[in-house]
Length: 269
Length: 322
Ligand SMILES: [Zn+2]
Ligand SMILES: [Zn+2]
Image (cartoon, rainbow over all chains, first blue to last red; front, side):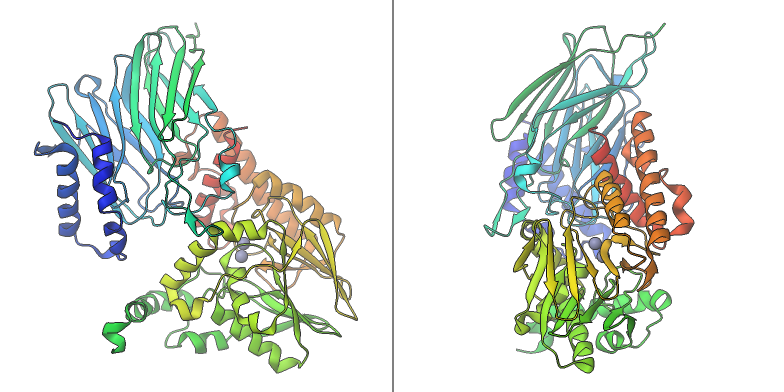
């Protein structure tokens, strides 16, 4: 049995304040970090062994984030044939399991970018699963703090304006080559940790929990997301166009459902 | 209960203080000073008749400087004293209050909260007992609701609850314009649209003609964008249109010629806007854009590196949906 994201959430809710209690996350030893990772990995992947890799997946992240509420992450997975899925885990976030991407036949996995929140000085792990079910991990340390509880620059009401609007941009297409695309979704992705002082209450978590992108009849990826994804999610990905429309279906944990269709770029001759 | 075991905040503070102290000797040049003595090394400049301003440090808030990083001060009128900016912490505000007491017996009747940022808002607690009118932008309450506690926690982490103080709310909300009459002089307020933040309030003194744009005008220190880039450029036009010759910026020298200062700020914000737009148009992702945009401005501003990357991040999010 492979624990689902929902399972992990239950786990992280129980330990919600454990990472925060490490006020001095900066001074944790490698050993402490490693122990934490072992615990998280076990909750997500069970007893499966995870080998480290520096070829199957690489994480690129700023060493010190300028804005903890928007930390850009790049996952590079050059060997498409060897990648079934990738999970991004931000060890010290209140809900460490940030996202999981399961790739379909239309995916080009070489470069995947997303923006996340980082709540503490933390290790980040990318774990890829190969088609034969093996797991490989890469790690990156990031300095940032307060990303999950950082207030939005606007009122909740304003932040929810246009929720579910989507845009997609395509890089120039070349015949027979995969295309890079940028998917933008308007959504506050409330973390549940942003406090409204009038009510002395937290704005309830409301976040994109699933996004499926397909090119024609073939799936590019399905992303399972969580509160660690930054507001107004933006995902850069690669896909193999077949001339048919690109469809996006997104949902959030409060029952929001949105879908959009975009014209695929036609190769310029 | 002993202080060491029973007061985690305090013992944590002491540890951190020594840490920051050690780290900051080079940049602040304040070795060996206690935070209090440190605050006492500041001076007030009389920048106009009855107008006293303290130059904030060009630094980030830390345990040593008690967030005394903004230009704060007061105006003495016939009927009372108006505080132009309250300070970055309760301790900073208390220091300002003592500076006022050295110079006048008149009551403190008004305290201006120019916008939501902690370096301008947290000194207000020092004046609560004076029962002044706290003047703020009509949107300030909402902004403090969303961020006040968040900022307070961050300051407490730096120098403890006692020196941080409470979140103080405006008691007079300015939605458009307003006037305050101090007897021999009138202060005219303008509430601005989203610019530096969503709660920027500027003020003009009738007696000196000086403009107080607060953080709508940064000099020397790199501006920080936290409202709307396009809005800020628009509001700078209104600042210019006041026709004021000189101004007291929120950061930098305590008194400057307005036109060249606005021109420098406009040049930075324009570079930020145009180069971010160009990056978006060329599909340069945000993580690359932060290192490329507005680099031509690097030598013109202190603290450029960190804040510029942050500003690009904010600008990118505003402009990518255009
Ligand atoms: Zn400021
Ligand atoms: Zn400010």
